[in-house]
Image 1 (tube, rainbow, N blue to C red):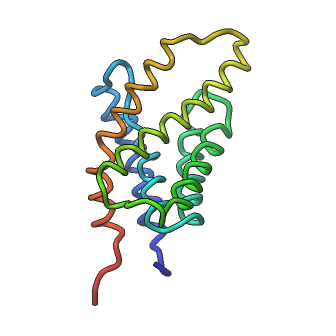
Image 2 (cartoon, rainbow, N blue to C red):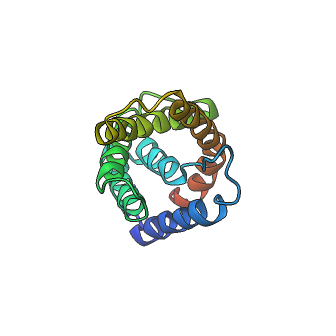
Length: 163
């Protein structure tokens, strides 16, 4: 896809952030919300390659960092890495398969959470414990459940129109 409508991309990212913060605040399961921006980053990497995946990751990471209490840059680094990995695996996985979408989204939450874990372990200088990883599992499952549905919607919205 040569001409990508960046306004549509950035508007979608902002809308996903609002939904993630406002709507899922009241729909939290075990205190977790799905990572909608992460799913978007994975989608863009899978469908448009490394550069677009990293771009979606950069913008997603900036948005998350602006509205996050963690150290600025952690989300940017994590989301760019996930966008790169998804783009790298673009032609190696069956991206249309819901099992691939589910599994890779869950693994992406694990990657994101591992970076948080390393950051927190360095800051707190204490064992965070198994409770942290239980929350990661819930967050990963919650995110992965939404991934196939959002992939379907993103495919409709961002696929090139036949003329």
